[in-house]
Length: 273
Length: 273
Image (cartoon, rainbow over all chains, first blue to last red; front, side, top):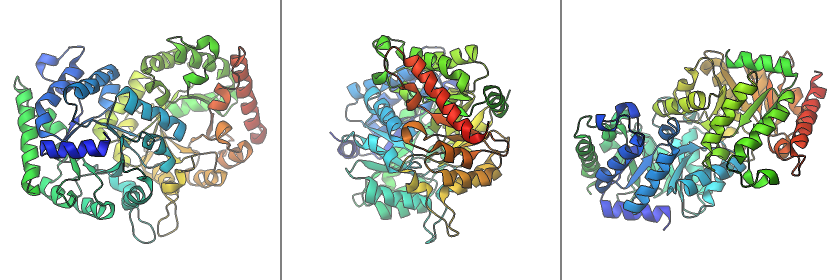
């Protein structure tokens, strides 16, 4: 099944637009996992198991694994999700961007080694830096457009002679030229609902990956109103830290599940879902 | 020693502006290494040993290791270079770019795990996505500006109301605002010598990492004339495939050394060094 179909099925079966971001910060792990060599895998596996009923996707952030020599645990995690939650799309958050011959290697990393359903990529190097990912026809390619951090404005807000900012140029390029096989999505931060609406107006029903609610402070209601597609879907609204570290005692699994459910419900309240 | 000092010493002691890019493509390895579990390490180690006399830096491209589950070999390689070629700067080519909390992890990956002297980063997410790298005061942070691939023009050539293209905006931002501690460099492709000259005019003596000669076809003479700083240095001119795969028989080490020496000489002929 291709990524966009898998995502649509997940929206439908879960009734959720929530994406659970897996940013495993070992310093914040519960006591029972401290010191275990497989702590990163075990933490993420548990989080996925308890939050999967409330989520349409999960998004492991590869940097948190790479900084700890834990690529093997990321492999194991992705294989576990595929085996135990086969309908849950896995978005590898890697934000890669490089020339074609190197991008081929990164695509193999994401899609072959980690078996991810989709990967995030950076548009700065242009279309040919994305082509090697697009050649994996069943996979999703989610392009950075308007990021949720403060510095996102430094480049993304630069305007051309007609007053069009760079992030809208990227949205149009992806929607009109780069998305030749219907595989693409865009990253648009929840910290800027007005800009989500402007992107949505340009890209039809293209899926938007929306980080920035939860710890980053984005407004859920405004995000949903701005980002939903005509069918009330179209979004993967990501929360990482607010779910992962909702509890720090023995009840950390339950606390994460409750936080995920509450976030799903807050999203659905606005969506009318 | 901080990165820029280490680089200046390497320019001076080697008399070379050549950077050897380590893009280990296992399919192109010589027969003697085929099937060896440590083939990637052994290939790169040999290349570094024979080309180091002709180089001011080496640049491992992390994707070629990640796609083959060979992070351990990259660690070993970086440790080997530090032990056996301690004056040779190691630039980890990773082109990372993410929000601050994630960038902290990527900085640990580059500077702690791999002990790199410098890392390449992507500017699309703005200043706060670079800050965690800059906090490693002794390390170099080399920002993508004008890349050597055809698609580089898709975004980097977009012009503002005054006609300034994005890549020159990036050059100015880095030179005037982001380079608060003198750690930064810029990536500017050799396929566009006129643009190298425009970047050089904006950034003073800032080091430029220049890919695109060799397999990518950039003109060495035009590159050197456009990119040299007032002292005739200022550049890390990268060649990867044209050196790594100069020979494919038993003489692959000698062929790589000869290709590196010839490239150094071609650069120096124009430089007057």
